Length: 315
Image (cartoon, rainbow, N blue to C red):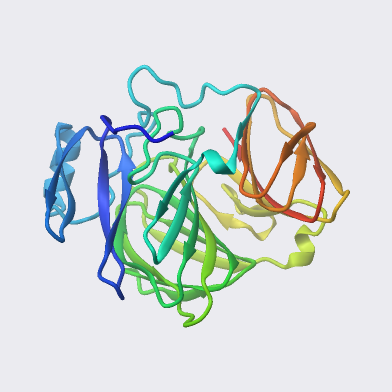
């Protein structure tokens, strides 16, 4: 559901380096008035005094203002008030078509706002993007966010203000801790093939961390009909280290394969079906569906056809 946004969001203007068109990527938590200016995108007038100071100190630069931990939901709502398993069907997500970018938002993001879909635990953004050949996001900023990117098809070229310049390919995970502030660009280097990716944001365990970047290819055999840890707080099993009490696991399932996952008491989960179709505790899920999981300690996952899934274990 798309609602007129009375809860505003601080923003980053992203300019497509080829077309010059801008899209907005935003971080909620600020009540703003939005002003319009030709070819300038959106300029927030911040009414939160603390965040207004940060905005001014940054020279009004287009950097994502920090999220205040635990306060991303509008008054009177509870982003963590979910049933034991709540399905987020693919067709119910927010959607935008910018021509060069087709994007789907599981949670409120940019021009898509739904007060019932702000976040789940520390999981703030789950965007599925399709970027056209030779197109991408120009240099833009982030702050106080753990950003994980996974490419399903195609390639994504990354450059950032720390001097990193890498190409992300299928099977590789990228983690960027924005911390005190980082700028980066993401671009599809192919002239013929689109890139299909997921970009995921998690709230950090605390603000003001030192920015960092990591990238790793994980062997496909390590997730064939089993769970493979790709990101965790402690970096176990060679996974990428993220600054949050969360674990991300991946599995490629053959048709008919059943996997069981135990969640510790008071833990929560989010299952994202990247492709294929599965049954989660008897509930059918298809490509791009998600499921918020609470008050469940045992997850039974069965592939109805070949499938790839991503599981988040969250505090």
